[in-house]
Length: 579
Image (cartoon, rainbow, N blue to C red; front, side, top):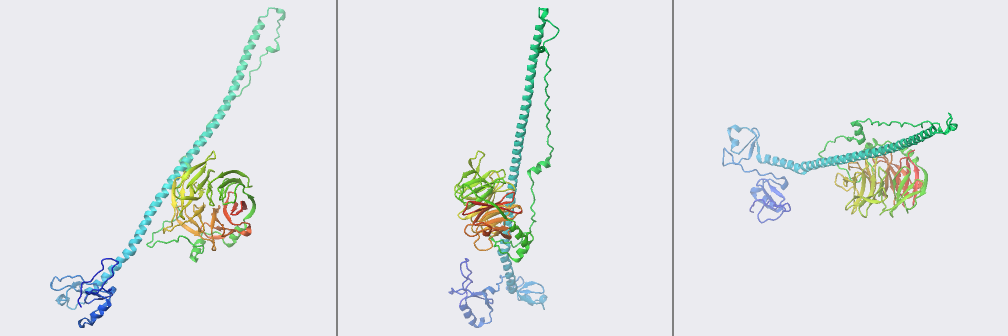
């Protein structure tokens, strides 16, 4: 049987063939003695040959590497194939008989070469399979962090400019009001002085007439009619009394650069400590269940300020104080706080009405509507609402007209919330059942897009209600899935999927303590869940037994009035909350 050169595959898809001519079977074994790869059949034939019986036959993966051919410099006809362990010098077999290597220990150089080759291969494999991709991942994180820092800084710059512009506008407004007040004072004073001036005009005219009377009395020709006594009408009237206006002064405000800086706000460094980047990146699942491991519970217990007794007390403090029918709507799908005694309430048919807490309608607007949290009230009491059909965000102008505020593009805006912290707008939107949340500043400029977690997994499908917590977390109800909470930079913090199957989060809000209140509405539940700001379930705040049925929306006003709207009724129920 003739040997041939080893046929190494040219492409990764090609299998390793037997090294014997005319044999196309797969290679499985390797003869270390003659450095030949072979199949099982050829191996058996090879070992049947008398001179091959003592050949070392191993699996192909365990083969010794064939030494590169290198001639001995002292004995050019010999190849270097052994290693003097005492001198650590590669030699040929003839060199080992020389005087300087007498009684030295030798080892097969091919064995050393195979071991070193295998070690190098392992290290190369580790580099390619772990160190390079892991380093690339960390490098990508660094780049993402740099991009995030730039985005955050750009957002801060934009917010600073917006605050400065707002402050300038406020200064202009105050100046205009002061000027108007000054003009009114000036007008009043001038009118008073003009009246006094006319009084003196009349008095001077009177004196002139009186002089003429006196002169006529001096021209009498008949002395019999002339007496020393003057008539009463010729007595001189007193000079009219007038008042001098109070002198006005302007007292400039006392302020310095620090006072202006306080008005504009300042950049605050996050409490989060600088984290060491690990060789093995930490993985966070896209949707975490409500059940947590013991270690997770222990970790979160550091943040939870309520034990079971306190939670029961909090739940028991919710007391129904009233309810009213909302005029002009079929159902109550979303409630936005306006002033402490006014609400904006909508149904799925596009009816958007403003009422007081007694149910008296103040005004009504017809919109494209939707069964989502599609309207919000800004810091300056302006009403903003989404139009998912036309993919825009609209605003109500001062003359009560609807004007386009933000053009979204290809995405349909579902939910919106105006931040009470800085006035930014948070808009939940979707396209082809893929969702995202976009942050805009108060002028409508896009600041941040939140769509995926740090593993690239989608965070949202249908973000139809949205709010912001006191710590800046963005809390979103994702239809039929979970409450998804990210921090203000868009990093996923946790997801809450309810206590049992059939959790469908709808209306969502937060209170002054940072609790998250979320409705489990539609056809899946009759409850309002209460969570702390770290996603820990505290209690079922409201249940069917407490008078709610299919709650869809919830809000807490400045006076701790808890308002709840229901799917199949236009009744709004009001509770007293956090007494």
